[in-house]
Length: 71
Image (cartoon, rainbow, N blue to C red):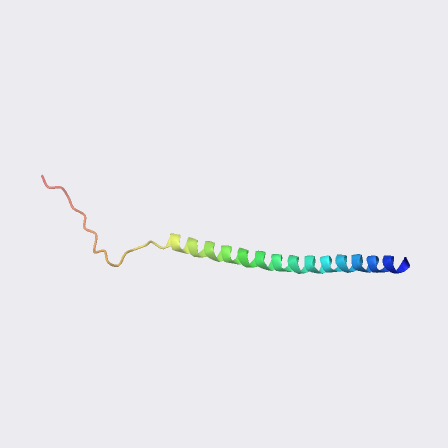
């Protein structure tokens, strides 16, 4: 009966060790993904604010003419 408990204990320890390793790997990948997404979001925000400050002028439109009413 001693061999059964030794095998069971070994299996449980291997299971917990495997779980801990997978958990650590997942956390690192999640942090890396989070950093990349934050950088991407910050880049989008800076691009958006730069676009908002520059007036959009269509080069195909001619010069603006102000007309006065003649009575």
